[in-house]
Amino acid sequence: MFAVIETGGKQYRVKKDDVITVEKLKASGGEKVQFNSVLLTGGEKTQIGNPHVKGAGVQALVLEQLKSKKVVSFVKRRRKSSSKTKKGHRQQLTLIKITEILNTGAEKTNITEAVSGKGLEINYSQSVNKKTISNVKNAEKSADKKVTEKNKTSTKKKEVKKKAVSTEKKEVKIDEKSTKKTVAKKTAKN
Image (cartoon, rainbow, N blue to C red; front, top):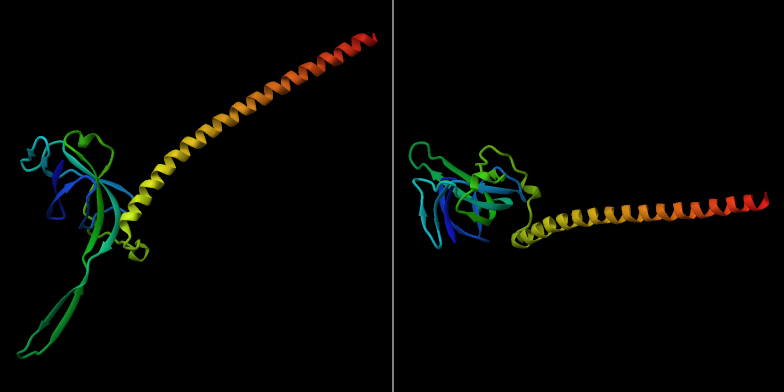
């Protein structure tokens, strides 16, 4: 299954587990975003939008914010002023991994919509090295670990409660036995 999405004034043909760079989005690394401007979905049944496919969406995981290679603009005016200008520009991009393509029901999900990051300041000194594919796997593993840790902690809490209840029951039984013994001794003395 594939889809054609529109973001940043460009169109991208994507399928599940694709890693692509798009124009800067307003999201940080590790967040999930959803592209609702789907122009076409394909696979078993092709749907063409007018201009967008109603109810369709593409969900993606933001891997990191990065900059493209520097583009140098050099202008030389030869006559009269004889000036030279040299300017450089690095386009800000977002690296994403497509996680799911939805034909219907995209508006019912609680995932934030992918919004252009124009005017958003990003600290690139904290950006991750170029081993992004391994970083994606690490992010997915950490998310899975968090879920399993929550499950483990809840089961540990239940076990601790059970142990506490069983020790309280044992203490109560021991107290009952000791009181019976003391009562028996007092009655024997009388």
